Image (cartoon, rainbow, N blue to C red):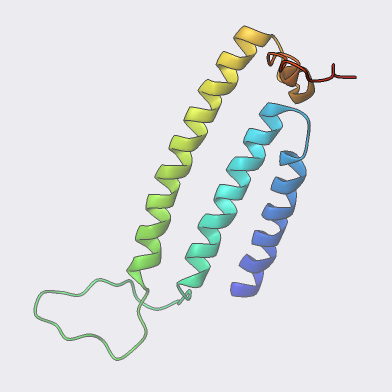
Length: 124
């Protein structure tokens, strides 16, 4: 299972880097989401996936002798999902405002909207 997830993580990172290098801000956002999902899978995979019972123990029981799932990586992934969603929501609102004010999501044209620095050469 870890080998399959490792290949999936590599694929997600490769696609996210490809999208983030595009000159469109919306593609950059989709690449950011894919990179966030790849990071979540890395955290989840680092917690050693087991096919054992969940990490639930009844009150007063001792720890089982067999392997159980680790709850810490699952909690970290849930936290990372919430943070990633918040980051995406903020970036999406930022992109919407940029589109409303500038009229494009092309990063080269967005750069032309910056004020010129005194003494700097004109963009070619």
